[in-house]
Structures are given as structure tokens and as C-alpha cells.
Figure 1 (spheres, rainbow, N blue to C red):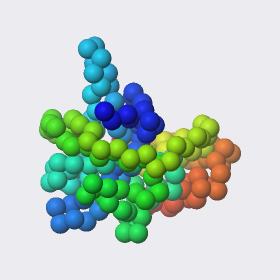
Figure 2: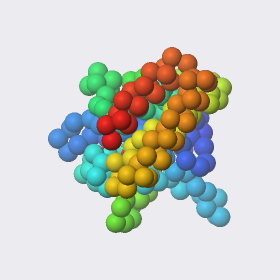
Figure 3: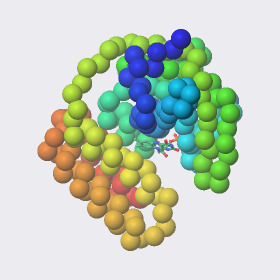
Figure 4: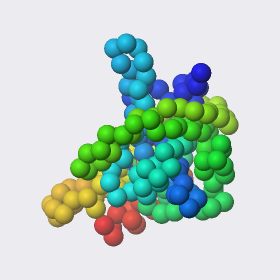
Length: 201
Ligand SMILES: Cc1cc2nc3c(=O)[nH]c(=O)nc-3n(C[C@H](O)[C@H](O)[C@H](O)COP(=O)(O)O)c2cc1C
């Protein structure tokens, strides 16, 4: 029995860092929403919706496996979204790359896939779990604001429409105000990395 609650994964969408490896063994990390839905019969259905074009999707289709890394470190979210993490940030858990600094790792096998034009929805079966640390953190609006800004920033390049792009940049600026007010140094650093990446999109 795999206790996802113990790893901080509840029902709804949990933002995690998904780590994968290519067929050739190269590790990759990206922020992804892990979807957990309960059916009327009471079963938990776990899935991810991976947009086409990502390395994560290519790797998962090749290997049929992924790991969810539970962390609230916004520098990890922003770095994994826009740059590559260092090789030294990874270790192996059950032959799948995972992040050394994560609070918990859950390795999933892909059990089925639903192919759509823009994305592929993959159903997941948890296989192994490791809880490295039980983290107790209060809600921080600055941290949440970095996350929201990062989601917008990863979507800017998907639109061709300049007006929509300008609106998205404006939203990122709004979130920045919250990050500066409520975040700590880690959130401030993540926000400036994100802003630098956003200006080039
Ligand atoms: C908080 C957050 C959640 C995200 N969730 C998803 C998701 O559920 N599915 C997806 O395809 N992309 C998602 N993204 C965007 C990917 O992380 C982004 O496209 C990333 O650059 C993919 O990296 P890769 O090419 O190394 O896989 C999310 C981004 C952020 C910041």
C-alpha cells in the first residue's frame, strides 16, 4: 500500500517536479501537475496531462515511467521549468532519476495513455515511495505567487498573439508584487530568474 498522503499528495492537483530519463539515460526535470481524482466508487485515479513538445513527454513515452518529487523550493521549480538542473542535483531511486533535495519521491508506472492533439493524458500507478523528510511549512503567498507566475511564463511561448502575450506579462508583473511583499530570499531569487526568462519570450 502506497501512502501518497504521507508524501503530501492529496486529492486535486499537486504541483511536483517530475523527473524522467531518456532511453539513453539522460535525466530531466520539469514542474508538472499531478492529478488525483476520486471516482464515485472511491478509487483514486492518478494522472498527468503532458503537453506535446516537452522532454518529459518524450521520455515518459520512451520509458513508461516517471518520478514525482515533492518540494516547495521555488528555485527548483523555476530552474526546472526554464533551465537544466545540474547532474549533481539528481540521484537514482529504483533506477529512476530523482532530486536529492526533494522531501519525497514516488515512482509511477504509466498504465495507459489517451492521445490528444495538444497533449497526452497518462494514467499512473504508484510503485515505490520514499519519504526523506516530513516538512511542515506554513502557506506563503509569495511562494504561491512564484508558482502562478511560473505557470504563466511557461505558457507565453504557446501563443502567437502579441496582445495575449502582453497580458500574460502583466499578470507576471502583478504576481511579482506579491512575491516581493510576501516571499523570502529564495522566492525573490526565483522570481528574478523567471523575469529574466520572461522578457526573452
Ligand atoms: C507549476 C507548473 C506546473 C506545470 N504543469 C504542467 C503540466 O501539468 N503539464 C505540462 O505539460 N506542463 C506543465 N508545466 C510546464 C512545463 O513544466 C514546461 O513546459 C517545462 O519547460 C517542460 O520541460 P521539459 O521539456 O524539460 O519536459 C508546468 C509548469 C509549471 C511552472
